[in-house]
Amino acid sequence: MKRLDLIFSERELDAIIKTLEKANVPGYTVMKHATGRGPERVVTEDMEFTGLGANAHVIVFCEQELIDKMRDNIRDDLSYYGGVAYISEATPL
Image (cartoon, one colour):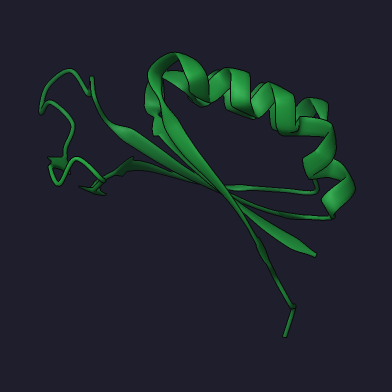
């Protein structure tokens, strides 16, 4: 089993969710308003009233075949506003 972590602009959330649902992933977790420091060494935060600039973190646990099915669409989704995607091994307890 794999763990897919996606961190991207919340503006891309609908597109990412559509990609996940089209691939029939078994489930996912969405954490909105994610903040942190990236390679630019600047802490990212959303604009207080509009929410513009806010990031989302989506976590998916699924088999490699589903990730392969989504890979190109995820890259396309992340390419417009930016974002990162990481795949790691996951072992259920």
